[in-house]
Length: 201
Image (cartoon, rainbow, N blue to C red; front, side, top):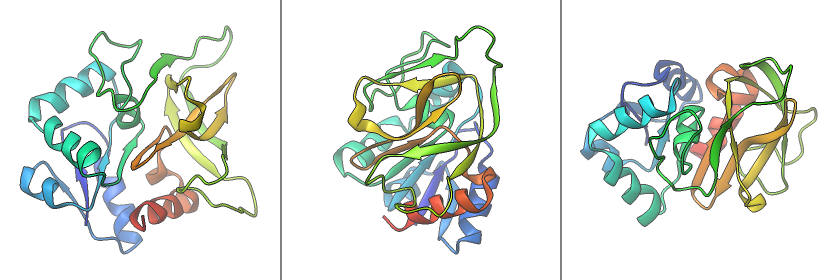
């Protein structure tokens, strides 16, 4: 069972629908018992970093999520803001992040670059990235909507890069922790396949 963590931030209905299209057992929940029993978790999110962290903290679920991800080693996928919140922090807010991933979130700052980065873009997975097709017939393209992106000095954490004025982390993978900056639930066939691979971990 996959549980999408419901903390009041994110387009969770679309994620749930995509999982159900894949015939994946999934539910949206803020119930500690259901989160505790989940095989895998998805941490969604859209909007402001500080607001997202404050909303998540207000649920009292952070210790439970840390036990699931850091102690029990169960798979956890952060989507968009959810991915950013797994880092140490963001230029968008003084509120610290969860700190599970070494790195931080920065605003696109190249002069003349249109922000937010919005629309379809190709990603370039690294060899062995488990959420991506190891031998795609064509480049995998996903739908992005974001003004901030994750940067990390740990190149081994990058599962896929994307180019938008600069290379940024489109996806990271550190053990059982996964993050995607794009929205798989809006990415049609490529997103459907990615969520199916996550469910099969």
